[in-house]
Image (cartoon, rainbow, N blue to C red; front, side):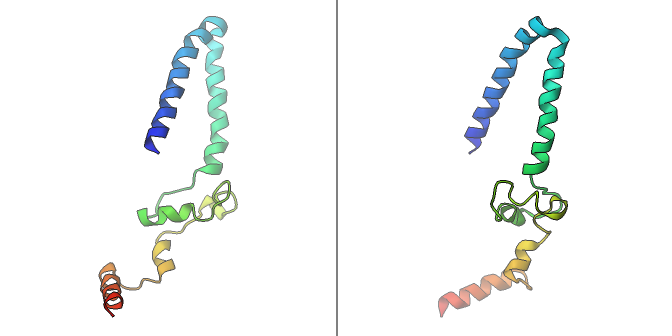
Length: 111
């Protein structure tokens, strides 16, 4: 997956490097307006499709994409927050620490 992302990044940079000198020759300073418009288009995309990860633990990140759908539930959730902090622990009903759960699994597997 990282190779695909890196490949798309290189292709985008290559396109910008090849297009920018030609655009400056033909439309001059208006080239900046083109790039500003493209950046303005990305603002709603980031708001709609990128879930908020501030304040959640690493274990909660897979839950961001559990709802599925085109936006992963970002647009239908209040404030764009699809996962609450420590939700993974609440869904597993963990009251103790990880060591207790590990010992319990050992007992269940032994018996």
